[in-house]
Structure formats: C-alpha cells, structure tokens
Image 1 (cartoon, helix red, strand yellow):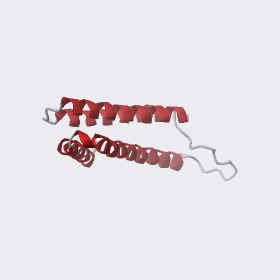
Image 2: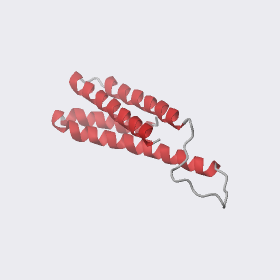
Image 3: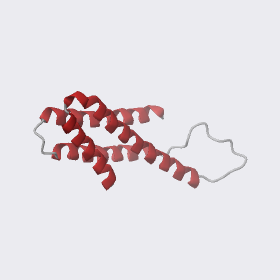
Image 4: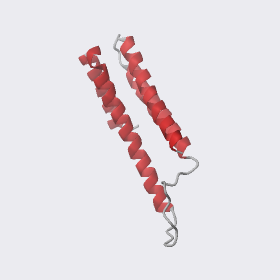
Length: 124
C-alpha cells in the first residue's frame, strides 16, 4: 500500500468521524469506490503484462476472453488480504471512541473485498 493510499483511507476515516453517522453510506461508498479503482488498476496492469509476454502469432485467432494465469486468483487474494489488513489497521488505529462506527467500517472493508474476490472467482 502506497503512502497516498494510506492518506486517502485516513482521510475517509477522518471525514467519517467529522460528518457523523448520518453520512456513513456516502463515506463507505467512496472508500469502496477507491478500493475498486485500485483493484482495477492492478488487474489492468497484470493483463497488460500478460499480453506483452504472450507470443505474437499472426495465424492464431484471438482468445475470446483475456488469458489468466493459474496464479491470478492467488495474487488477487494476497493483494486483498494486504489491502484489507492495512485498511483495517488505519480504521482501528484511530483514537476515536466510536466503536460502532469502527466496526461498521471494518465490516464494510472486508465485505467489499469478499464481493470483489467472489466476483473474480465466478468470472473464471
């Protein structure tokens, strides 16, 4: 996780604390959107790398779907765990006394990660 990503998560948590529980959905939606964008970037980069490594054969028909290595699911799982652990650490390290909000944010983070991983697994 880059420092910019940590700063964004920290800013989301700070906004959540300042705005209060009335804006839980909006703050959570923004966080989920950032998580999705980061995963999209990583998947796009992996696909570009895979396409550059594939041998160019002019007679071969293009595949109907992008080629996936056997380890792509494992890579997404590892990245998800790293990102989820980091995001959870940021949420829980905040000194706020609002345990309910922290619990909801942690559950939201892990639910988003689970949805993304399940969707990825079903696409195969």
